[in-house]
Image (tube, helix red, strand yellow):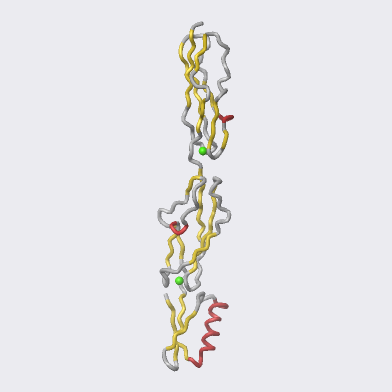
Length: 213
Ligand SMILES: [Ca+2]
Ligand SMILES: [Ca+2]
């Protein structure tokens, strides 16, 4: 809250010295000081001394998909202050934050009230994640073979791309144990892949038909 005391005009220099001592030596007063004349003899010295307090806002979103826009910082924190309700200035140290790279980033933030009182820093942890599944593409598709055909390389024509990891074709898991090249019938070859964040692609199935010669 606002702190006030009377000072005599004749004592203004002393009052200023006293206040500067509170600011610089004792650290009691951290804000700007204003003086208001009351009459010919007295004036009122006013200062606002409450330190604002920052907290993480309820429901603050601190996890973002890679490539997202930077957070709306003002929605992430709440500020409480005894002597100000507006006029706050925020200072975010967010130079390390990379919205395009998954990981956990610490963003310290401080707020200063209109009288120059700065809060203690609040460390906001921002997590950047990849929740987007990779996509498998089969350029060959369902195929028929006559019985006795040499078993082909089932990997041919199949690729996997992930928006974050890039080309993860090498990680595709091919399941072809059901295929029997010498028996008439239909069999499935399946293709699965996970990205590095554990997101599984939709399984792609290639139907293999074995026909009589
Ligand atoms: Ca304050
Ligand atoms: Ca992904």
